[in-house]
Image (cartoon, rainbow, N blue to C red; front, side, top):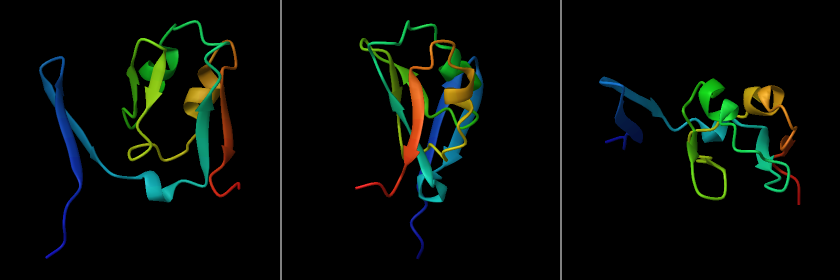
Length: 88
């Protein structure tokens, strides 16, 4: 039997969820919290809903991040950069 890894929650009255897509990723986002102004644009644009709000700023659940880079592209202060997933 295959274990299904699924995240679901309610957002604005709609069921929203997704499959773990983190293993698709070649690049992963890293946040420089000293540059982050907590505008939450990254959260709004994330197609996998992998970014949530925390006191420090955006929190990225890498299980759901596919490394598309939209968050880094949309960040007005360039607080998010993409790094090689396999960097040592």
